[in-house]
Image (cartoon, rainbow, N blue to C red; front, side, top):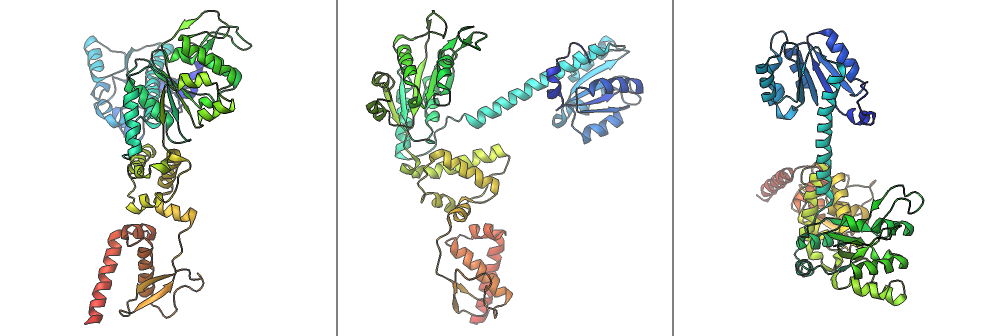
Length: 482
């Protein structure tokens, strides 16, 4: 293996695959042996015709391509450069290159151009450059996907409480004063904090930190940073979150969990606008807006002596109360479709077609876990392939109905069929299969308050199938009536 190669990247390169196209069997063998140490798959071909079969069958991240081949030359292999769905990096190699050939190769989009005979290390360096570039692109995509998944700043809902919340965010955003956000767990306090930051148009970043998730002895270093040797294990200087957030917003989540000793240090920072890293005598000026959040009543914590009163006043310059979901259930009509579309896109699943009853069913629940619980329920329903109302009945049990009236095909007589029949008893023995089918379908339609779409989903058939059945029954009944 090349001494210039970083061995730490071996595991990352294993996800890539390579195709070597050269009519010299010896060259195929050399490159196959060298590249197999890096890549999980290395295939070889002696002509463009054979290579094209492999390329359309498999995915390759890199193609090492000889220009001078029997039949079509490497330069003439247009499919390798124009097929966007199977785009690979291409390294050309040749022993008979001139300037015109090199220019043609680069115009096609080649990543590199290597003259034969070449040193193996030269080839490996070219390969490494291509793969590092592709790795960077994949990491960037992953970060972008993570950004889209976890950082949503849109506050959804049309209730009066939500409208007031949006108005407060807009009103408070331009100020640099501290903001205190109070609300139950799962109500979206961080979402509100991000909304305040984005609307403020501050140039620095939004930096969240959970005060309750960090050990008390590490919180000071996490916030203010430390110098090398400040304590055991501090081998180098570290910038704290205040410096990272300089020019932006520092979001202190679960501020009520902050130890009293740290509360006094935070108060000093808010008053003086400077920080002192652990182990340093030097004060560093900072420009950071503080947005704090808690699921506790901070005034009550002050009264109990668990939170400093002076810090409470400093944080509570601007106050936002986030209402629990049970107090703004009209938001469900917007929240359910919003989370359904978002989660279906993340999971790579088409938008499920849910009935209006699925939203209605959620209005009868108080949502102690708030928005977080709602989102988790919707994700679970999408993964299980069950509409919320159906899932709700399974976990909570449907309200029993004493009787369901069904019309049997033997006439226009109405028969009261008990809902909770013993499974061993089933329908009356005298009924035909058609009568049982009709009774069962109508029983489910009645259970879903006449919603044929919901009943069809539970039966595992298309709605058109139910419509056809009803049409058949109507025709039969008309015949009997005549």
